[in-house]
Amino acid sequence: MSGATRSFAGPWRPVFLALALWGAASSGHAALFGDDEARRAIIDLRTRVDANRQAAEAADQRLSAEVKALEEGGLGPARRSMLDLVNQIEALRRELAEVRGQNERLARDVADLQRQQRDVSGAIDERLRPLEPVKVTLEGQEFTAKPEEKAAFEAAMTTLRAANFPAAAQQYTQFLTRYPSSGYVPVVLYWLGNAQYANRSYKPAIDSYQRLLAQFPQHARAPEALLAVANCHLELKDARSAKATLQNVVKTYPASEAASAAKDRLARLR
Figure 1 (tube, rainbow, N blue to C red):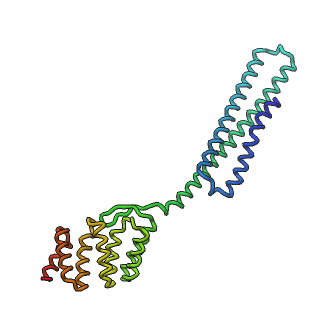
Figure 2: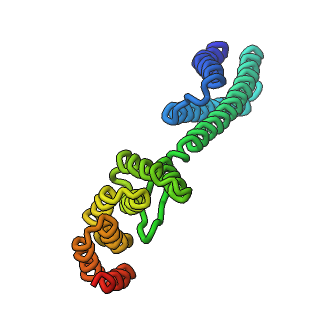
Figure 3: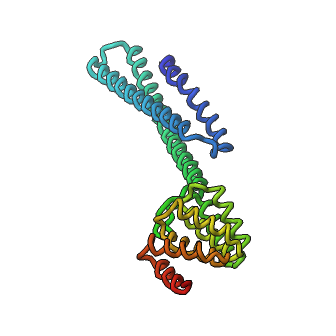
């Protein structure tokens, strides 16, 4: 049985060395432990657990066979043969106890590895969550936006509410440069035009409103933007362009509140 005992001890020495090295590495670099690597380690440990279990079952079968042979053979064989058989049985029992102990240690190692993998995955999720796009509903439109994109829009709106129109116009312009495909674009164009209008920059305001009308003619802010273009023309003392724009509001958006306001202003222009 000394050869059988060595056959079990030999293959397990790399296992325990690998587990020891892995434990030392994971204590300092748990955050760097990848999901694929953890999964492979778990599968390897489970395979070794299964191998131990099979070895234990084989030892039980050998023990049962030896006992059965002893019972069937009776006490007739020589005492020396009987003593050898008893020694083999005791060795098998010790070997079985050792294998079961290895199973328990490996089971604990697998549980620890799974716990560490969950901790690492949870930490990664926590770091990624602030970067995930958020759902936005704004003036009848639904879209997704990056957190920093949403924050930039809200910062520009805060500046506008503070009546700092030049700074607000600058922030809206920067937003359009950084996020040209954002779902915020039509609303940003509208408020950019308003900030420019409030700052008496009427021609740039007309350009902003016209961009909104050209790109998003069906947006909820489009009728107001066209009415605002007429207001800019009036501020520029261009009554003819203002009148034509007001007529366009009534024609293009007849059911809007902007159309009602345009009719009133047309009546005053006459």
